[in-house]
Amino acid sequence: MNIHEYQAKQVLKEFGAPVAAGVPILSADDVEGAIEALPGPLYVVKSQIHAGGRGKGKFKELPDDAKGGVRLAFSPDEVRTHVKEMLGNTLVTKQTGPAGKQVNRLYLEDGADIDRELYLSILVDRETSKVSFVASTEGGMDIEAVAEETPEKIHTIAIDPLTGITDGDVTKLNEAFLLEGAAAEDGKLLFPKLYKAFVEKDMSLLEVNPLIVMKDGHLRVLDAKVSFDNNALFRHPDIMELRDETEEDAKEIEASKHDLAYIALDGDIGCMVNGAGLAMATMDIIKLYGASPANFLDVGGGASKEKVTAAFKIITSDPNVKGILVNIFGGIMRCDVIAEGVVAAVKEVGLEVPLVVRLEGTNVQKGKQIINESGLNVIAADDLDDAAQKIVKAVKG
Ligand code: ADP
Ligand code: MG
Image 1 (cartoon, rainbow, N blue to C red):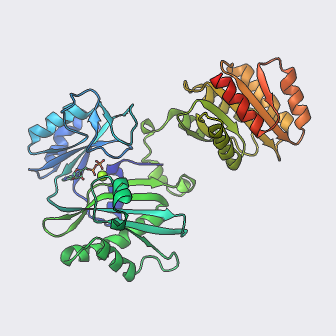
Image 2: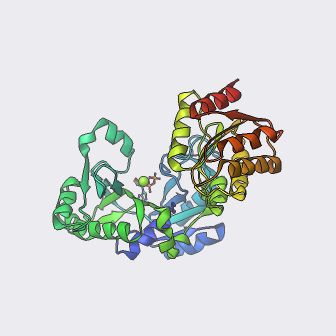
Image 3: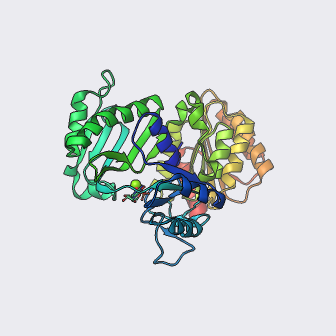
C-alpha cells in the first residue's frame, strides 16, 4: 500500500526525522488556514498523488508552458493562484502513464534553502536478503538515469538484521553522501531513525529524494515516498487509516474485498489462475506467444464458486480484455468443482469475449465433461502450451 508524501512525512516525523512545516489542502477552503500556519515568505505547493516525478509533470488542462506539479510561491497571493490552477486538474508524470492522475489533494510546505540534493532509499535487497540503504549524492533528479549512466555514484549499504544499523553503517552513509560538520552530526541521528521507521512500520520502500543539505548546514527530508508490505498491514491500524482508495485501481480494490490476489496490467488477455507460480507462468507463456496479460490473478487454493464468479466480474469489467484464459490445476481443489464455478460464473456474468479453459489434476475428466456439456462457447485446452496458443489465436485472429 502506498501513501501520500504528506502522510509519509507525518509518519517519519513521529520517528524524529526533520521535515518542513506543512499543511495538507484537501479543498479550496483549507488554503487560508494553511497560509496562516506557515511563516513564509517562501512556500511550496505540492501535488499529492501516488506517483513521483511531479515537479517535472504537466497538467493536462493547462497550456504547455504552465508550471509543473511542485511549485514555489513567493507570496500568499501566488499560493492562491497555484492552488486554483492545480487542485482538481490532471497531472501527467513519468510514473502516472499518459492518462495522468487527478490532483485531489495538495500540500503547502515551508520553502527550504537548498545547498545540495541527495538520494536516499531503504528497501529489502533480494540478493542479500537484507534491508539496505541506497545512497547517492545525485538526488532530486531521475535516479534511474544516474544508475544507468554513472552507476559508481550509487552506493548500497546492507544492514545486518542481527545488529541493526551500526555506527559503521552510519559512517559509510555519511561518506557516501559526502557529509561533514553539522550535516554529518544530523546524519548520525537521522539514518538510525529512518531504519527504525522502516522496520517497525513494515515498510517495503522508503525513498527520500531529495534528502537535502540546507544552506545552514543541516539535513532535511524534502520528499518522501513510502510503501508498506500489505501482508503486515493488519499490525498497523494507524497506517491502514491513511489509505486513499481514490488513488488505487477500482478492480484491485474489488478484488481485495474477495481476498483475490489481483494486479491490473495493460495487456488484453484476462487470466484466472490458481497459485501464484502458475499465474506467473501463465503470464509468461501468453507473452511467449505474442500477446500480453491484462492482469495477474491468483484465485487461491480453495477457489469457491463465489470467488470464481467475483473474479470473472472483475476480469470482464476491464474494457481492454479481448479474451480470457482460465488455467486451473486441481490439487486440493477438484476440477469438477472449478468447472461448475466457471460455468455458473459465465452464465451469471455473461461472456462477450473468447474463453479458453485449461483444467488439470483431480477429477479432470469430469471437469472437462461439465465444460463440454454446458452449451457455452468455451474453448477447451489440453495443456498450458495449447491453452496459451488457443487464447492468443482467438484474440489476434
Ligand atoms: P517529485 O520528486 O515528485 O518531483 P519533490 O518533492 O522531490 O517531488 O519536489 C521536486 C523538487 O522541488 C525538489 O527536488 C526540490 O528541488 C523542490 N522542492 C520540493 N519541496 C521543496 C521545499 N519544501 N522547499 C524548496 N524546494 C522544494
Ligand atoms: Mg522527489
